[in-house]
Length: 72
Image 1: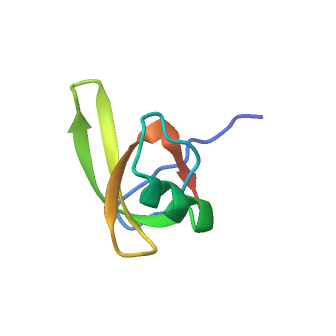
Image 2: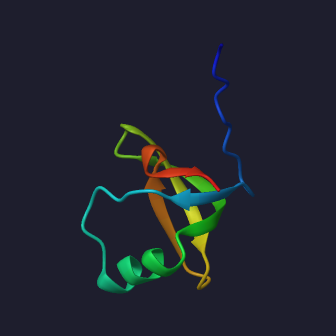
Image 3: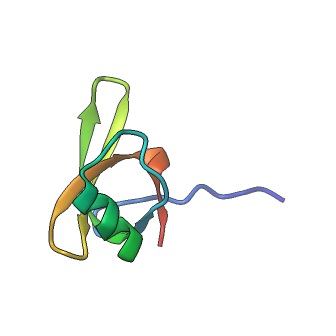
């Protein structure tokens, strides 16, 4: 049985599953209460990959590495 890759596009609903770097306490609390958001953009991250810009429930936007999010 083959697994099909899930494509994440602008407008996709995603869930933040982990965070590699230290982040502000307010963002930690927000993610604990609601880790879901909507992809609004993509950006190149240090030439090592693609960052995903996510709009969270409080209206703020933050970027995450691709391996820190999953489809919601």
